[in-house]
Image 1 (spheres, protein in one colour):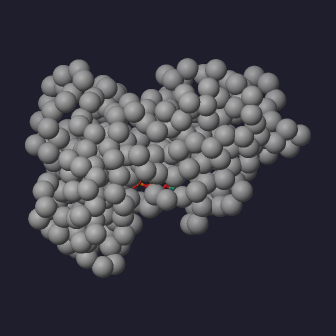
Image 2 (image 1 turned 90 degrees about the horizontal axis):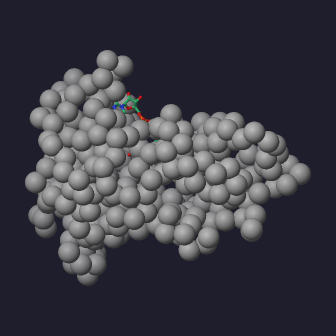
Amino acid sequence: MSSSITLPSPAKLNLFLHIVGRRPDGYHELQTLFQFLDYGDEITFTLTPGDARIRLEEPVPGVPDNDNLIIRAARALAERASHALPGVTIRIQKRLPMGGGLGGGSSNAATTLVALNHLWELHLDEDELAELGLDLGADVPVFVRGRSAIGEGVGEKLTPANPPEDWFVVLKPDCEINTRKIFSEEGLTRDTPKMKIAPAFEGDASRYRNDCEDVVRKLYPEVNKSLEWLSQFGPARLTGTGACIFGRFPTESAARIIWESKPSGITGFVAKGVNHSPLHKKLTELK
Ligand SMILES: C[C@](O)(CO)[C@H](O)COP(=O)(O)OP(=O)(O)OC[C@H]1O[C@@H](n2ccc(N)nc2=O)[C@H](O)[C@@H]1O
Ligand SMILES: Nc1ncnc2c1ncn2[C@@H]1O[C@H](COP(=O)(O)OP(=O)(O)OP(=O)(O)O)[C@@H](O)[C@H]1O
């Protein structure tokens, strides 16, 4: 087996996000529809026999290595091994904005769990990896499992879903949003009635909303302005707790026309929604 592997670490969108309650520990109970994008970071893992360290070739700007979810995921996995493991050097090509609501850090953690489980030949099953992942972040399990899904609980109870694989214009207003801050806002809607989720949910996500959107629009005028602009062309919505917003289009060319006309100074990208994670697709090709 090769001792080096390069794998995608895709973004997710929350096609809708309802807050349906609050647990005694303060965490919010959600109903959310996750879909992956064929766009994200890329991570290369190279085993280093003879050097037991788990290290990043270069730090992610603004994130101390000890806090980096890649390092934390690798260490958590290594603790599960019953024998000495070779070290690993990890290189990340970061494309996803931080604090964007695209799940970048969680996706990096999941790619690390899946990649090192493979390279270290640990044979943990998907349930074990998802459970390890949940300790690192609420969004990690869906990235570990790699299927679009309705997430309930804090996002760890997953029911596979098949939303249409549309094209998206994703815009990143010029601000970073802290997830914890939004979940602690007094004015946040926390009592959306729970829906009954049918297996293989294929409902029209645009009928539902993101309960964080009102609060985020008020606190971040940049987000409000971008949503107003994108809404001219169809339903536009916040992902996660922001800051990114997305508009849905049936074809790539329709999405690109809108992308080309965006106001100057806004960053982002055009990507396709996919119901199978690019991570798992690539890993299957490699096996
Ligand atoms: C908003 C979403 O992106 C939707 O997919 C996720 O629920 C957030 O997931 P995440 O970024 O992995 O969040 P975590 O790192 O687990 O949590 C950050 C903080 O947000 C708050 N938090 C998070 C998730 C949740 N369901 N309820 C919460 O109240 C908690 O204060 C927590 O300390
Ligand atoms: N590998 C990593 N990549 C990005 N952020 C990381 C990483 N490791 C730790 N972090 C921390 O996680 C924070 C949130 O980053 P992330 O990119 O996951 O935000 P997000 O897209 O808003 O996530 P979510 O949608 O899950 O709320 C960052 O501000 C950073 O401090």
